[in-house]
Image (cartoon, rainbow, N blue to C red; front, side):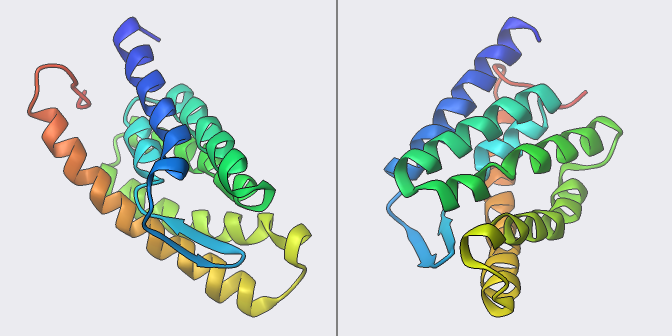
Amino acid sequence: MNTKKLTVTALLTGLAIIIPFAVFFKVVIPPFTATLGSHVPMFISMLLGPQAAILVGLGSAFGFFLNLGPVVGARALMHVPIGVLGAYLIKKGMSYTKASIITAPIHGILEALVVIPFIGLNVYKLLVITCIGTILHHGADAFIANVIIKVLEKTPLVKFSK
């Protein structure tokens, strides 16, 4: 990882840790929570590659664990496999938009599965609240990240395209 990519990864990781503390617009329907913008660092890190996605995902899990506890921290840990999958899809030539769409249902399913030890097999809370809620949250943050990516690509500092 070159210095510029490492620096951007560190900044995204810092954002991923801070967002749970700094963003006040949250939707809470236990076990689901949605903090607007919390997936944005993960989405941007997908453009930097799998290593960056791992570090940013771990930062996100750490931030949510510290701020909202183990259930939300465990759900945020799913940013690691989703970010890595998205990074590989993009690395193989898939567009950011397609990678975001493909990872959305996987993200929802993973977050639903990870809360089972905490809430049991409550189908409504797992499928409707957590899975579908995560998919919708994923889509909203993918859109926000896309807007930010478009702005960043116009600057000489960060180039995501190959």
